[in-house]
Length: 240
Image (cartoon, rainbow, N blue to C red):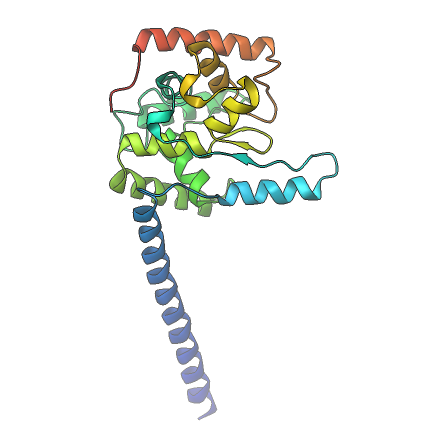
């Protein structure tokens, strides 16, 4: 009798756990889909990444707290910037559906032979990660990145993905988006950025707190030159 009572309790406990998981997943899917739909039109006020970095700035005595972010619509962002980041980060941006399988395969082959790891994240993946997720490298976060990338590719168009990406990407410690970066580094608006300036901003994106657009190293200047060449090869501006 005691054994039967014990198994009944275990069964009921498992049912409650499964019911909780079911409700959690339903709420998660509902909220995540609604968020992506809402941000199809509304500016992104702040992201989890920005919050985490702000907390780290406050906790680290060596870092100065700084938060600069100004939203700019795609019409007020220079075509030079749009083309530069595509050349730098994701040249197949307009043709893939969120994931560049060829780039992933090449990165895997490279990483098997080299200690210096190469990523293959597309602009869509980076946008999904920056807007909806935290920074990390575990499989759960990666799975969520795939999920949100699928959602934004389904609900947003390429122009909106680029607009959001350029408004949330980090360009320095506490500097987010091309408008804030343009004002901080060149005392001008994102709409008036030149090709050379755009290529330099794009060149620091792999590590914007390590590299500087104001005092570029020889490595960054080489990247700038390469990006400018790619911009010339791909043409004047993007056609979404």
